[in-house]
Image (cartoon, rainbow over all chains, first blue to last red; front, side):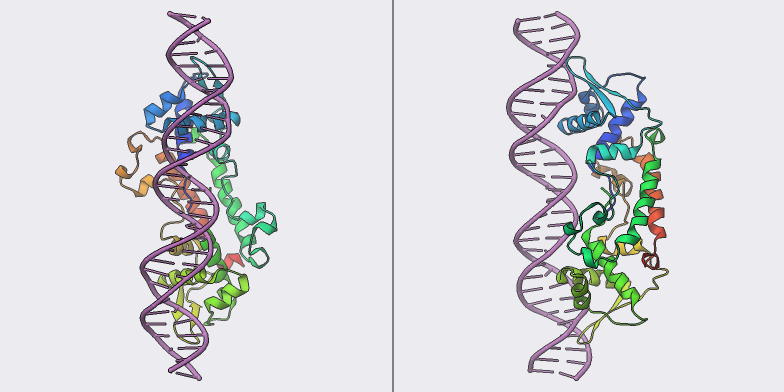
Length: 135
Length: 135
DNA sequence: TATAAGTACGACTAACTAAGTCCGATTTCA
DNA sequence: TGAAATCGGACTTAGTTAGTCGTACTTATA
């Protein structure tokens, strides 16, 4: 039930790979997808999302590619998850972030409040892990 | 990405409802599904699973129903999740519990080990929450 | 200036999972 | 014997995830 999606896995592998390079080094999507046997098209999309969220920086054209634009010491895994999924990594209780109308049992739901604490505790754990700590 | 399934939500609501009753009190599926507006058939299945895992106890026939057979103080939310899903609540890194052959990028995956720590940290948080604490 | 190597991006398909439904069987009380 | 309950498998529907495809844009360089 709590499991990383393939997309997140691939993104983490790519980011970790780039973090190993020297500062300012360019990496292409092909290079990374080849080395780790990841589907090229899929990884390409992920790189674009990471780029839009300023986690990596893109250079188009021949000799183009991506560089890691964030310091691995500061870059949190939760940021990467957010960039790829487009939503916070932990949303145990959807109701909190939705209007009551979206939840069919809103008026009778008794477990919402207690689980908010659980949610923030898990959030804390995930927010603590940086890319640097994945080495 | 980390989100409770409807099944888990419904199961938690039912368990919490039963925990409010006096010790040994019988509850029927219909009674609970009516009160909280949950789909009867679905809840019935969940009750059966909880029963199989000895979290609740079933009594068949007229005047039958379920009683909570565990003390809410000791009953962990993670146990309920396991009973419903049939697997541990947190399996961030599938590879750990699988044979390497099942993971297409097993030999090249670099993020497995670092995430195991994350996994056990999240596990700890979830294992700490009991039904009693949901009141 | 043509070409190749790269990113950008939307649309589509396939596979899988979650949610919900249906139907019949069994148990038990009155 | 009939009603009220659990039991349990098969099925359908809806939504999500993973992956693919096609095309456009950008840029270095021969």
